[in-house]
Length: 140
Length: 81
Image (cartoon, rainbow over the protein chains, first blue to last red):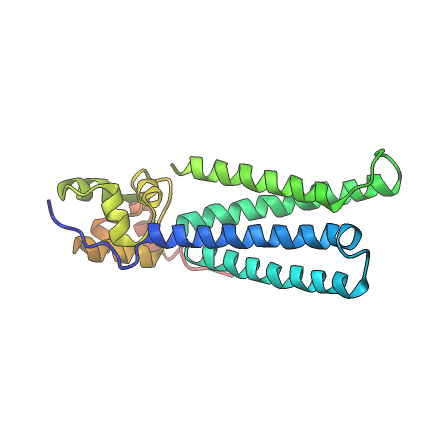
């Protein structure tokens, strides 16, 4: 068999490292967001200074998560990048299609609950996961 | 676009994973190119050509080659706007 020389710092190990980094930043961002959401009521009795600090921390960690995501996508190969792009396109479309009517329905009391942003995040997460799965299966 | 990637790889007894490692892409990408589900970019096609030490047109070819040649001759590929 002719020997093939693998590329230095192979694609698989690079992607694994980037995925781990992305999971780490997602976890930290989730924790920072939870702290920002529950901290004022349960931890520091609505003290303004701590609330502002937790918001600043959440934004800073959020920027870290965005950069990690950007690096992850930049180092994917062209097919994986295409799958990600398609998933993001579908997710953006669904967020708009679901978000605007949900907001209108809330404003005119068509729905018996408050249209919280969390509902939209859940819809976006599910949409992204499903379209990513579809894209991955399509090119398998 | 059609290609002879699977045939060339088999001639050399390389696995998809080995080829993917050498091209710095995922195995899924190699498989998608081989099965014609995905057309590689020009830089990736050149990397493939370099790896197999073959001209790019001996690996990848247009499915509608004859039609393209005719269009080139008649000049119908030129945007008339």
